[in-house]
Image 1 (cartoon, each protein chain N blue to C red):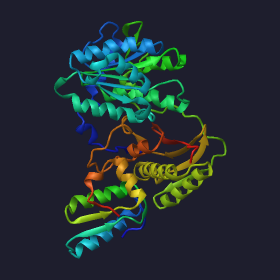
Image 2 (spheres, chains in turn brown, purple):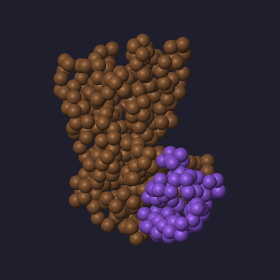
Image 3 (tube, rainbow over the protein chains, first blue to last red):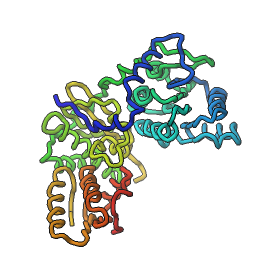
Image 4 (tube, each protein chain N blue to C red):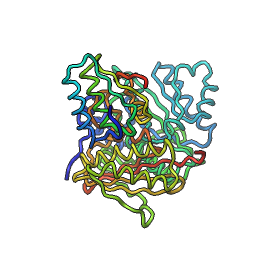
Length: 348
Length: 85
């Protein structure tokens, strides 16, 4: 079985990330019931009830950071950002605000935003604060699965910098199952004003292993096409025809074709065989294009790492995530599956 | 002038034609990309590598939506000697 190394130099170029040491550090946090560090990496789920409660709980966290002159990034929806800005008044200029409904539309685009912020401000042990709410009521099932994966991967991405990240979850509006998953993806949980270690946290080492959570099956009778290097252009035409048949048009059709091509090229080059297979279907107002091959991926952050400006490769998954509304990546010893989702625009 | 689709299958031919042009030792080389209907990260990588090697002596003519899209998505505009098509 071929092992994929999309960009083996990436870890070396980003020494603060993906450190085994940080994994051990977080694993220790997870099993210790009393030793909650007040400095260093914290990834904490905050359970709140409604907008006023959120404000009451995050304002002290932000003010504390601003008072200590810690770089602070707040990624929430625009309404919550406006409410926070009003409450902070003149103090608000000390923090950076980004609209989560924009950067988090595809949850795989969030980690690079944090990476950029930490890289910009995290030098010489500078402590950093963040608030990020990637999960809101109304997220579909596939999006939720990827949001939980995003939360898990934050534990793998960060660890070394003095980074405190608070992830609000609205217990009034989210299903109990979502809250239960938040306990599995966060080493720390804050509820009723108190922070405790989460006993159901999966642990960083388990998270960094191959991710092969099952995906719902395609509709029955979905046609499948095998492709290889000689038939890549023909496969693009096949995908274009099937995507058009379910209503994908214009720029979205070109974007799907490019994203498919990037993933399929990875299959041809790294796929552990001569290529892979592709199928296209539509479900719940989105076009889904699935690419399968026999390779397996070793880096848990393969689809979150911004390629270096002069990188010679490793751009495929990054490009797919910039082009698509959602990219689902599953890999195991027997192969890799990538599902590209594009929501059908009804106005074109 | 490359036309059609630039991907992992066609990049080798494209690079060969480019090298043949370079061998004639021209003062400058302009690659007109305006008639490309498709280009992926493999094609972009070839352009980046040419731009690196022939800094100052190379121009790439824009005008193809596919070329614009891949440059924007990858944020590589500043690394390419682009000429408006």
